[in-house]
Length: 240
Image 1 (cartoon, helix red, strand yellow):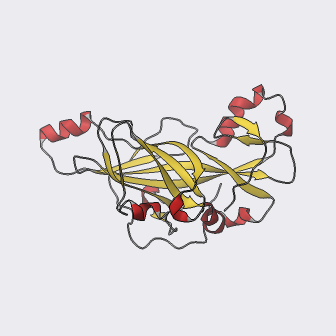
Image 2 (image 1 turned 180 degrees about the vertical axis):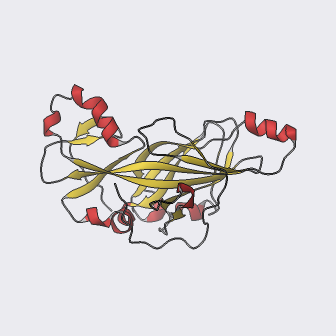
Image 3 (image 1 turned 90 degrees about the horizontal axis):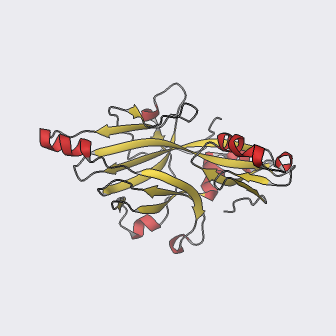
């Protein structure tokens, strides 16, 4: 599943290299990595950081709009902080992952950010311990014009998104669906996101996480498979 980008790269806020390690144990999943930048600290501070890790994870992917963007719809990730400490200055960017290069070399794609961030200060958000936040990542318009333009005007339309690979999700549930043969063909496209945040210990942590955008065949089949809810339904294409 290759990515086709017609966009330039963001000139600022570039990727920071650091000691990176995988953050997934599922061999069939895309490689997601974490690149923490450790600050010099005392033994006591190092112990506190090791025993109280601050995590920010994608709980789900959905679509949303808000009053600040004039009705524009956004691909949105629900960020969750399952740890016991707050995460600060959180930013999320779609990035361009290049073939034969480390994931940590991926660079942000220039997209029009939601005006929601201007209203809350523009320097990233803070998520308290055990809290979550719906983070608009990229508008549906720019998904179609910058991220996957080759699929925007063809027989497929963008209709769903998920954290789990849609094919794995389909295989797991297809045997229990009585009308599986009538389900439309779909194409999953991987989108890499860079999640960067700071901890109260002044660490900067950068995670590169994959999500999947799902495109359905509009010309054949009756129902669509929705991996976000593990069920079938009428195909409803996402509108700008």
